[in-house]
Image 1 (cartoon, rainbow, N blue to C red):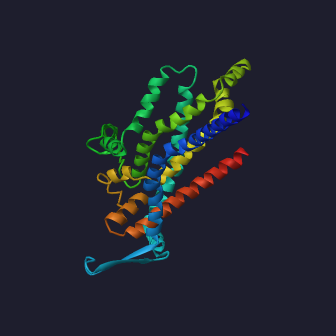
Image 2: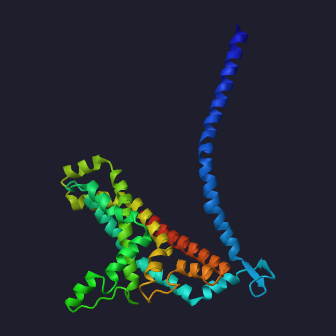
Image 3: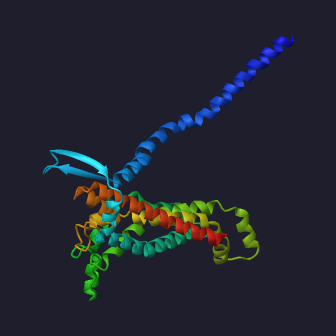
Length: 312
């Protein structure tokens, strides 16, 4: 009798062990396709780009018909990238762009989120979808649409201003950067607004009820309850915006056809693209890409350090 009980208990324990092992393996089996794709399309290209930035390709013959050799170049590609005045000017340009555009966009997204989540808001779902709609348009299409409002002879804004004696030049050397900023802001305000709204919806309703009992008005609720509790969302959207600023590419590339003020190295990404596909300097372009990534990491790290210091 005791022997039978021992056998049954042992088999039950074995099945339980197999079941627990299968439960532990299941998440990894489900994640494997994503991890492989992530490795091949994200991690591997990063290492390839870093390796290429330290490599120099030598071609023998007029078109390389006599052979192509690769050798270690040290930091020579980085010296060429940093020594390129146009590339360094493009970095300074996007830094100015980010200093002005990112705060304006985050403030606009926050105001819209607070208004749509207020108790007096009407049709919030409709307006959320409306404000988010520009994000669904590809950057190229959005830039083409806005170019019709920037070009003299096509833009009703320019025509109306000319009738009033005001000369507007949205594509001039002093204004085209802010015309690009307008397109980017129009595109991403709704996206950032939804992130902030998601954080607002996570605020417990008891806090609002307690504030109403204490006689707090909408402004008091916004500044004392909502803004402090959505700080993580504001930090997240700002970091995304900082990274996106250094990746600026599609909008200036399209406006280049309409504005002589935009050259082929107007932004860092445009500079790397031109270096690779116009001049065939793939190794220097890889060095520029690494510099852009490091700049994005350093700026994001500085911003996160400052926000964490203030919160502590």
